[in-house]
Image (cartoon, rainbow, N blue to C red; front, side, top):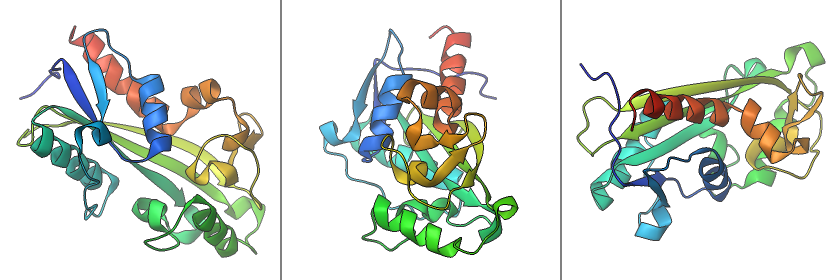
Length: 206
């Protein structure tokens, strides 16, 4: 049974999303490890064919491991809206179509929630972080974070990416996109999951 995690000198960050990479690099730090974005190693984006955040995160990490022969950290995340029965979920990045972008995804979600009352606008960001030592790793390390909030009625704020511009943070009474990056990283689903990963590495004295 695997009880800890093992870190090499270099770890691939298995993502092509610039916003995610920026947050990953700000939160992830370890004196014995150099983190390398997959693009610097000519790793293409993996086909996300899984049916859950966990499956897709594993697919992305394994893809990076297979190509680089290095350990990899991957992220799969998205927003779940209760009124929409968990959608867009794992399809958050392509909610408005395969050629969608943040603006179109946000607008489609706002349209879907146009006539929904405040009490029914509950939602949450989910994030799964996977660490794989090698492509055939039978026990990848999986860390998860959840950030509760609500869907706003319109786009607001200037910071962040994805659905940050329409996600209301009740604890700070503002949109995620109105938070300073350091505060967002303390609160967010991704920050939670990454700190769990760092704690694992600390506990195992890597």
